[in-house]
Length: 224
Image (tube, rainbow, N blue to C red; front, side, top):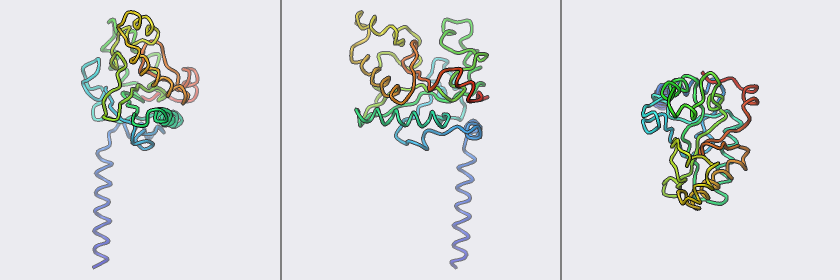
């Protein structure tokens, strides 16, 4: 009887494992094979809301299909976990929220087709240049509070306006189009990310990179 019970349990476990593996998206499998790390395996408190896996993005289309996970190069993933720790040192009930992480070039191409020859073209890297996301070293990110609400940054993710650009923060503060609290919230995010080694850019408050482009090109292959 014990022998049959053991066989049943092993078979049941095998079925569960097979089902879990079979539901994993092809993109996730490809990223894992390339050596990238799923952020959720390192820190379960970091919130994942992959905007390009929904229609809630500037394209209005789901660019990722059934893929809805955040992957990064291992050293970059470790940096992000450290940024989460830095954030929680000062705001224990806040968490980082990831809007996008590693992005295959095939997805970048689809995004480019949407913005090509429009005013938005300057906000999307041409596939020929290769996005830092496609090296797995860039992340689009924000903060959620203890209730899971987005911390107000004064402009939404993928809001392609000057209000989204850190370079104009003081200008919009003087014009009362951004509040000091909204700028302070951006600084909280920026400081947490910078303390973990990330660099921010001047035209998107949500975008951070782990290393310069040339270093990324030397260390990693772009994800196709």
